[in-house]
Length: 388
Image 1 (cartoon, rainbow, N blue to C red):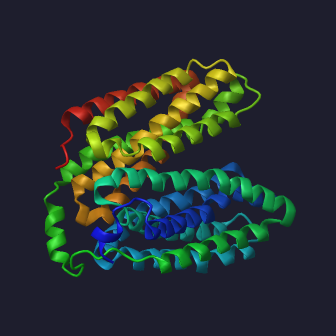
Image 2 (tube, rainbow, N blue to C red; image 1 turned 180 degrees about the vertical axis):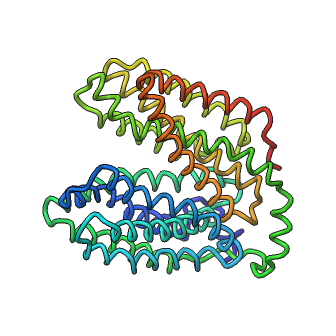
């Protein structure tokens, strides 16, 4: 496929087919957000449920950097199909779970491996099929598909469970995986320079020092950590105020994030990555401090809008910044590194900010999170290298 002829527009047919493949893949995972309801019949402890649900992210974190390199060397489409096929083989075994012991832990670990492989490769394919000069915008659109599936997946799963039970839930996840596999099978991979020349690619990667990688990793890690402070604790905070309804926060957050990514997700393409990352971080930091002052529903909804706006700005800019630093030839590795850093931050943030909230309460926790993100963003803007 000739990129110059067919990729001039963002909304070319190959990009849309790959985007639907990514959406269906994401849907197959988000329906499992309600899996703890299935486990409740076995009377597990909270720590058992936490282990079963959390092992998925842990294995995804560890597998991504290894397959991120293979994506660049072996080809995106091949690795994407392999990861989705891995999930297709694994999901039917959920029908045979009879307790909350080691078997569901094992299966969730396997789905984490398949997810870590397929998500990174599929996201990379989608970005390949968009115009080169609109890379950040394409990452924003891809993120929009993820946000949409995160909202629709649990909603659809809840209805399916009520009407047909959990066996139907597992079958629905499998159906989404088959749809994703078909989409990726129909997707044409962009022809790039000889992928077999691993030595040349390794040399280009070595031009980025380990110190640089470690330094720039701090920003996505901290961003992931403060994101965890919102994702994992905002419901408990809302109930402690108390507010009768919490869902309007998530609705306003998702709407703002979707609107931002669709309409101004290309700001860093036009003005530079760091020129967008710092203001976006400031928006998120200010919003975290504003959350600490919430005492009414209208302000709660407003913080959701502001938070979604900041998230919609920072994700495409920060993820594309790491791609620019590591190199477009190593896009698969760069995306896998970004996702791994962000997931590490989410895991660390859940524990760290939980500890802060135990000591000082939710309001101080959000103030603390806002200050940390602002300081890290300031140092990042000052010292982080500019992508060329």
